[in-house]
Amino acid sequence: MVWADHAPFQIKALAIAVEIYKDGSGHYPNNLSALKDLDVENKKYLASLLSGTNGVQYSYTLMDKGFGICAAKTGNILWRGETMSNYFAANTLFNSTVTTVQSNRPAISNSGGSAASQ
Image (cartoon, rainbow, N blue to C red; front, side):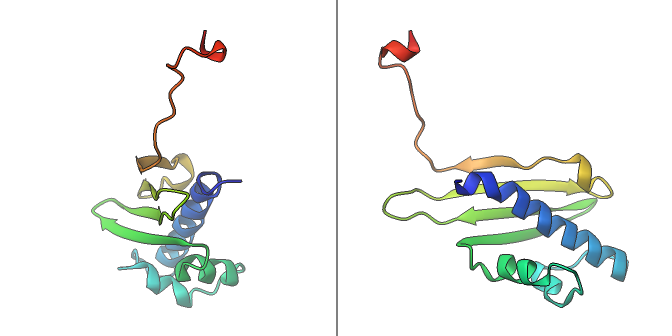
């Protein structure tokens, strides 16, 4: 599977951790590093996401009525970087979907007149 298949679930996992933090403290965290001290069942997975061991860096933006999480996969010689993000409105975590807001992948075109595009 490619990164784009996993990223929405990783963003959602971080969003759930943010909501768990909010439930325990009464407010959203100021940054993702505040999640390191959460006592959650999947603490090792959360720690791996926060440390970037999967090659993805996550950023978090606190907003007036919710928060945003962005995942950025850096590129290399064979693959250009890609960014996905999602805004989570307060109390609507499970009703939101993760969307690609910027992709550095080259567009694939079938306009070359191949048999598959006719």
